[in-house]
Image (cartoon, rainbow, N blue to C red; front, top):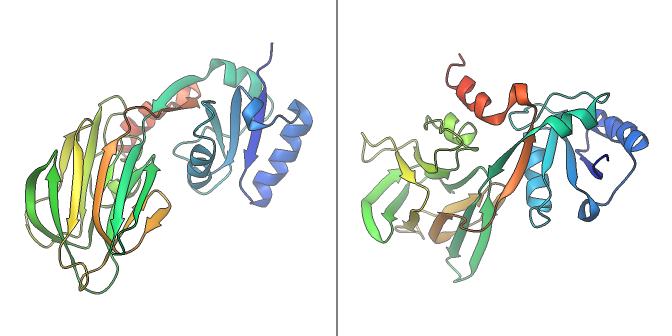
Length: 254
């Protein structure tokens, strides 16, 4: 019996045309009633889809119809049912961010790629870094710093010269962005069980924002990041082009 498929597409003309054709061929099911969600677009739209439907517990199969498709399979419409049936599942565990702003407001958000802190003005950020309540860097002077999941390690983290993490490694990458002091510190690979705490020093003079994927909080004074102990989401990949292999290949890309 064929799985019940819900389709979602980015707003590009190409993705919308594919959406119409696929719904005509396979029908239209609401995501809440589906057994699999097919996302049409690029990695940005895939992240939107993961956030939008993260509480449904429905696996997501992406097809690339965007500019970047690291999390996506190649687009083909003629053998979709067979590809979904043969696809290999990959579980992602997101990060949980708790940010406290200057006003005292607390904002919670999750990130499938990374949580990043960035300076808001010309002034460099001064940040104290603690792991499980123990101060590891008393003052990191930088443009910013991020914590990345294995799945997100080939995104912003890689652009900031952070390490690429194997998908099943149960570790996180902490990577500074344009660090000034300590000059020789280039980041760390952390166990997934660790809780990271960032304290913004002199935050009135040196304001900092915190962003969990696309959810930004301005003027933060403290940010806590940890891997979610309960949340997971499942991506489906074609056997010949799974996410773990892509992460391996990316380490040899020139």
